[in-house]
Image (cartoon, rainbow, N blue to C red):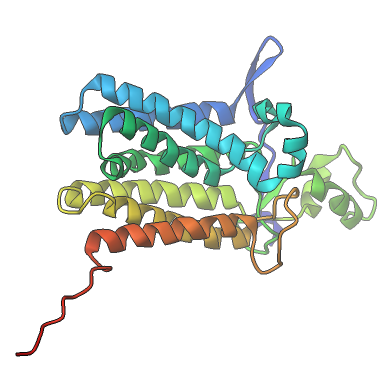
Length: 295
């Protein structure tokens, strides 16, 4: 039932201004940041925080996220190349962002901000991460428009045929038995490899997570100790990130230490452990019960 597969050949550029293209990815990323800022601003103003403080926090977070995303990709996935060619770390337009690095960037940026303005670090993080899933969902939609971060092969009827994924070009030509040429994408689509739309899986999950945790925040943030909300958040997020890696194609620049675990999974484990620690700390799991002396 090949007709059930979705043929995906969306142009990542929306339109051109001169020689510069305005891309879907940049637009969606900007919307994610803007909506996140508005939500954070609204929530913190409700809690009595001045707008000026919110604006400064937003600058810290945006800078931390962007630097973390880029440095995470360069240092986690291909450190040898980028340490030998450090100037190319700045070539963000060539692609290469790592969400685990972005998460680390948020943690560091909020820590620096909390130290400077004398605000409880965990309490501040509880509020900042509230907006993260929405921005993450928009980023993954941007990845979908770029036909990047694609999944492994699938026979499921919702599989996507990413015609801009050149790795599948030669197999499609071979599968056509010479019927289709290099430029005949309409012909080749019939023989193209269907893959899991992992970007869509993640985007849907993040949007659901955003709605769910928004309601959890409203109901429990005043009852929980600082850090408990954050603990739940990063545990759920990175447990999902661990398992979604099974549907993804491994980044080509990472050879891996073992076939049993991928880099994305390896990077998710410390965040899961951190989330469990924060929950345990907030719920008092680590408190020792005092021994009652017998008379």
